[in-house]
Amino acid sequence: MMIKWLGITIALLHAGNYVEASGNHAECWTRWYDRDNPSGVGDFEILSRLRLENPMEICPVPIQIEARTVSGDSVNSTGETINAFDTTTGFSCVNADQATGSCSDYEVRFQCPLNFCPLEECWTPWFDRDNPLGHGDFETLPDLHKEYPWEICDHPIKIEITTTSGDDVSSTGDVILAADTDVGFVCRNCDQPYGNCTDYQVRFLCPLEFCKPKVCTTPWYDQDDPTDAGDFELLQKLQFGNPNEICPFPLDIEVNTVAGNSLSSTGDVIAVVDATTGFICKNDHQKSGQCSDYKVRFICPNDFCKEQECWTPWLDRDDPSGAGDYETISKLRCNYPYKICQTPIQIEVQTVHGFSVASTGDIIQVADVNTGFICENYDQEDGTCADYRVRFKCPLNFCKPPVCWTEWFDVDDPNQQGDFEKISTIREQFPLRICDVPASIEARTKSGASVDSTGDVIIVADTVTGFICKNSDQKNGNCSDYEVRFECPIRFCHPNLCYTPWFNHDNPYGTGDFELLSDLKQYYPDICEHPVDIEVVTAYYDYPFMYTGQTPYKFSPTEGFACRNQDQTSKQCYDYKVRFGCLCEEW
Image 1 (cartoon, rainbow, N blue to C red):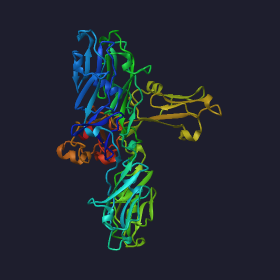
Image 2 (image 1 turned 135 degrees about the vertical axis):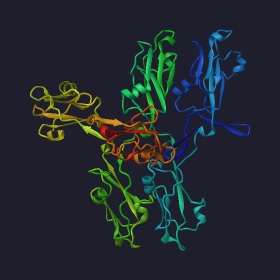
Image 3 (image 1 turned 30 degrees about the horizontal axis):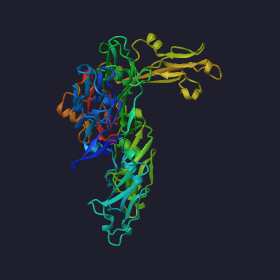
Image 4 (image 1 turned 90 degrees about the horizontal axis):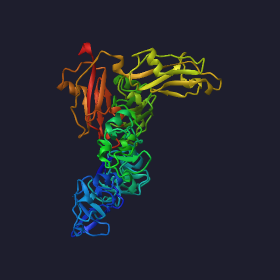
């Protein structure tokens, strides 16, 4: 199976899969599987069960299935009646259908596309991040790591270099300064006897492990018991009950009993087990009349598990035609109001064409989150800076959709056991003053000091219980007096909001999914002039964007929503739809 992951086209590694010759052609076969024996109802080598018990070992669409007895005899030689024998279901033989009253014990294997079989080597794509128009051609590994994050292993085994037209380095006659797996590749124009360096491209050999798809696993879930109709561990209900824990489109599902035993060990007849629906075991399908109690977990793309980051768009307010290129944060704020958070965490700089600062050879005066970026022309050998752009990393909540905060609540004092600002008590005393599902909680002392400044040991501070500080946990025997507030969707603070229909104007098959307000207004002119809220969910299953693990490029009620494929670890956005919240009197 070929998977496009981080821009690298890779073949999955499958234990036991191999290529065998058949006439003049090579074929890719899985290993032989024997997961069942005919001691029960029959011999059931069902494809869905085999996938479950041997994840990532069988291709999504097998070309052919083969079966034989475990002693190596052909199916035909047994003379038995076979119930199913195909690449959709797998293989099944029912004892009751046989003259002898019992099936033989069978094993099966599947033929897959050739590219599903193991890789011998793991190579990155070819990279050409620089050209020799400046000081030379600098395909340095640190710059490549930065410009193509996650696409090159940390410690490459080998480097290959060719010209961008595919010729060997030796054919150019260029003097090469560096070509190794530590530095990467460097060709300097000043080292060449005749003009500039040729334009080169590089790729790296990585350990085979690097080419395996990066995935993550959710916790185990057991939301149902088999006491009624059966055990129903349904994906949508699990996603709803465990927000932000399960990706919208899992790659696979794993099932065990709550005691930790394998699914196959129970002998239960399973109605559904897949990553789209989840898991269903019905009691009336079982001989005993009762399913075992099961738990499930899901395999998700690495996008979903990676630490989320919030970056501004790339900003370019100046060019180097005057004294230099001044991308100072104060002037950027004037040119791009509300685009930069109050306290940026990090700054990134590159040329407007996407090349690194290092590749230009420019001397940089300043590049930090306090001042921004300054390159002055008189510092440069050739008298002029390159044209640069910058972006800033901000706290995650800067990229979140608009929210609002409740008033501060203080329902308890610490003069007894402690200060218990429980959300249940707050709801009783202040009905309808907190949204149903707060996004976060904030606490401070009654005098306005932060929790950290008190030094108190806090037992609980969450949106389920609320806030608890116990006097017995404190060195001085007494908690401070606290108050709390909760973060809610903006619609909670603006109950007079009216929402547009859902719009899905774009899909992610080009550079990303762009549901921009300016574009949508051309097709739907009835959208209000000044939306105050935006909601974004996946086009399928209505999965909220904030739980997908993907990185937004734009997320604003005044601009709309944009997801760029290049910003995602998997290099692919989901398909999203949006709607806008407008003040009802304006719409």
